Length: 215
Image (cartoon, rainbow, N blue to C red; front, top):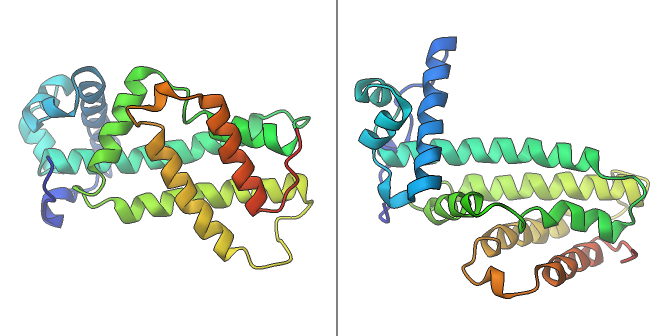
């Protein structure tokens, strides 16, 4: 799955609209998810996904023209789910934390996951270019950056709107989030001090936003 496919081979054949078709669509994605986590991306094929999902290959092909289309849909779904999880995570953090600990709570979850989650994330990250999802990934990282940025301003500066334009900062933070996602699945990540790494990333973030790096 290393070479980039044409848009037609990656796009959905049709979007699920009725309740039953949406259920079938989700069952197919769940089957693909299990295969990637359990057996690795190399074992993914439309036939195996259909078998794992308990649907006919014809039903699968109603929505997905290829395994790349399945991966592309999985990536879109992960972006949506992880954005909602980030919002919930922000809402659940103790209001007593200072800016450094607050941000470490937000960013740290990327580095502390089950092994199967890391395998799954790495597979999708590695395939983003092949399935044409790099622009969507950058939009996702920007949305996460804006969400964290706004909440930091509201909590520690008392406003959602800073006095100076933030576009340069958001641009930088977008690529910082992208680097964070890629580094979290790096094969060497377990050989370094994750706590120190998270501390350094949070410090850079606060410095860019001109928020005192307090405990």
